[in-house]
Amino acid sequence: MELVKTITIGDYVAQDFRTAAIFSKHGIDFCCKGQRTLEEVCNKKDINETKLIAELNEVLATKNDSEIDFNSWPLDILTDYIEKTHHHFVEEKTPILLQYLDKLCNVHGSNHPELFEINELFKDCAAELVPHMKKEELILFPFIKEMINATKSHGTIDEPIFGTIKNPITAMMHDHDHEGERFRKISALTNNYTPPDDTCNTYRVTYAMLEKFEQDLHKHIHLESNIHFPKAKALEKFFSTEE
Image (cartoon, rainbow, N blue to C red; front, top):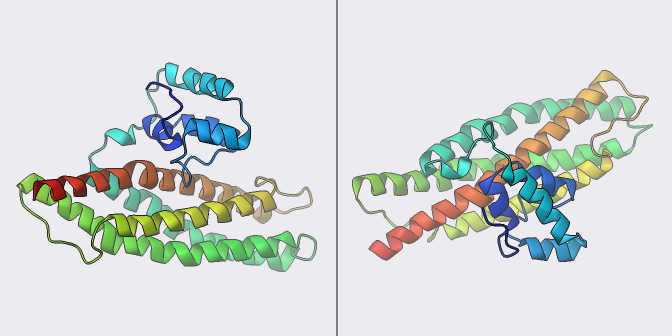
């Protein structure tokens, strides 16, 4: 992949997910704000562009046998993967974290009042992620699969109730921005998920789970925003030009 400053951050990560670690190290949001160019983000955050490109080049120059190339996956397989992997992760971990955070507030809240804000932020996250994922599973993903099936059968598609796929995607991207900002606050309040010295095992486990939750959410949002949604919009465009 040629490194030019007009390529977006999301393009880099879509090409090779290992570059996400470089962007994260420099505090660059590659998932929710992946549509920014390298030049834009370097100017805004006062980052040495030459040095950043050198770091990215070093990663891209090394052979990568372990990282999955999601960008090469067929759209229907990627759709199923997002639902069965990342949606399932959120559904499984959310109730556990809600329970643990409530317990931490009750036991340690007097000495660590930041726990109450962390708890409220995660409760807001949980309350919004559930309907967000259901909208994808019941509205957006079925339409994507309908387009894929029509492509395979050389058929046509009916106009969806939402007009164009750009409309639900725009709403999903808006939700992504909210969750990204919410977890930036949680990360700051937890000192990058570093528990205080005077804490119990539950405290340490909860912070580790929150960190894992954020990491999974970043990859989840990246896959949708930088690979899945652009491919879906391109597929709809194919139908609009063919009909």
